[in-house]
Every structure is written in C-alpha cells, then in structure tokens.
Amino acid sequence: MRLDHHELVIDVGHGVRIAARDHSSDGAPIVLLHGAGENLAIWDHVTELLAPRYRVIALDFIGHGASSPGKEFTIEADLAAFEHVVREMKLSRAAVLGHSYGGMLAVRYAVDHPECPIVINVDGHGNGRAEHYAGRSPGDVRKFWSRQDAAMVAALAGPDVGSEGFREAHLARMRAFAEMQDVTPEAVSGMGERSLRPFGTSGRWIRNPGGAFMVGMVRQLADWDVFGLYSQAACPVALILAMNPPKIGADADFIRAHRTGLSDAFAELAAGNPQLRLVRSIAGHLLPLQYPRRLATLVEHLYPAR
Image 1 (cartoon, rainbow, N blue to C red):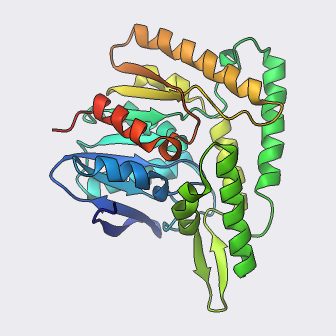
Image 2 (tube, one colour):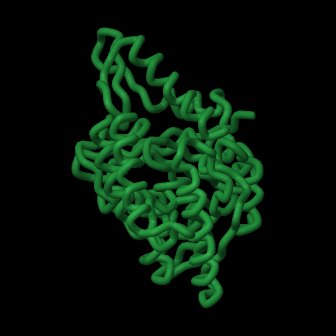
C-alpha cells in the first residue's frame, strides 16, 4: 500500500534546502530522521503502518537524498536545519523518531525542547564509550575503532560521479550491504534510488552523500558521546537497542559487547530517571527495514495515537 503524501523542499538559509515528505492527516505528528548514508526512504515501510493513525513527516538531512549536497558535515548544521523545519512546519509538539545518526540527533534535540512529547532513538550510539564494551579492555576497544575506521574509508572510496555503470555498481553495493545486515535487497531499493540524482545532461549520475562527506560525517559521529546527553534530556526519551547485530567478520564480538554494556549502563541510568525508557529488541541495526511492523508497534506503544 502506498499512501498519499506531499513532497516538500524547505529553504533553511545559507543556500541549504531540505527535502521532506509529509503524510498529512489529523493524527498526532511524528517526525522521522534517518541515519548516516541513508535517506527518508528507509522509513517507507514504517510510514505505511504509522500514517493511518499519525501525521508522519520524514526528512532528508543535508548531503543526503534530495536535500542540498553537503560540503562538510557538522552536527550543528543538521540540528539547526531540523529546528528550522520544525518551526516552518509548526511541528514543535511533534514526537521525533530517529534511526542511527537520526536517533543521536534526536537525543540532542531533546536537551533543548521540553515541549517535545517524546524522542525515540532507534539504535543510535556511534562508537560510544570504551567502558561500555563489556569484557573488553580500553586498549582493545581503541584498536577495534581503528579497524572500523579503516574499513569505512575503504568502503567509501571511489568516484562520486559516473555513468550508468557507476549507478548500477552503487545500487549493487547497497543491496550487498543490506544482505550482510539480514535485510532483503528489495528493502533498500527506494533508498538506493533516492541516493542518486542525474548529473548534467550526458546520462551521468552523482551520489548524495558523496564519499568524502561520509568519511567526515562518520568520523565525527564516532567521537560523539551521545550517552552523556541522556541525563540532560528535557523531554521523555526512549532508546530502542538492537541486541542482535549481524555476525559480520572477526569484530562481531566487539559489536555485541558494546550492545551488552550499553544496555546495562542505560538501564542503570533509566532506573533513576523516569523520563528515560529502554527497549531491547532482538533485531539488527537496520530495524526499520528488517522489522518495520515490529518497530511501528513499538512506536505506537511508546507514543499512543490520539
């Protein structure tokens, strides 16, 4: 089922335009924020389930999807652009649902916005703190982070512009990544298509985000201590933690150790703060694609439709 929606482009200043998709209805508003390297199409299946009861608005961050290309990533620019969209669309009373980086930014938004009914962070944490890697020494964790950084740089290498062969190779990489994450290749087709746009008039394509932009973005997010923001939140915050990450490579144990340690640390923090809620989900990181119905049910439980 495909629901009616409006495609919007919002000028947030400094030459930046943010693309949004508004499934207008009389329901309670909820804004969806995607992760690094993704775009609003990651929410398509979740939106189909939520839109009959909520007004669902999804955004493309700067340098992603149909929004303006990014020259250099900053968290502050994305936060300012998001807050501009909230004001422009009169969404101050909207809940915020974010995946991965989108969840991290949503937690930052929660610090300054007590009027927000709830922020829901779906598995957004970056590298986190070394102390949250259960059973691992800080030195071993730092070596793991270095290996992750090298792998990320290698994966993002290559041109940002090319012909039809470039387009097909880009989409094939996205399908292969989906399969590694226990997601069907078909589930990422919309997100893959939205990450490309025609370039010039000679049948060439450009990817958004580009490789250099993504490297800068992921490195900033790796060092961002989002955990420290939870105690500063001015509105309710729920963390949906994916406890079954894919078993990829020799470092899979580090990823599982982080989930275990972060789960324990957040549960301890939430025990003394009634605004915080932890939901452990037996799912992988790409929960919006892997189990959209499960995620939509969790959202309805955490933020009941009016």
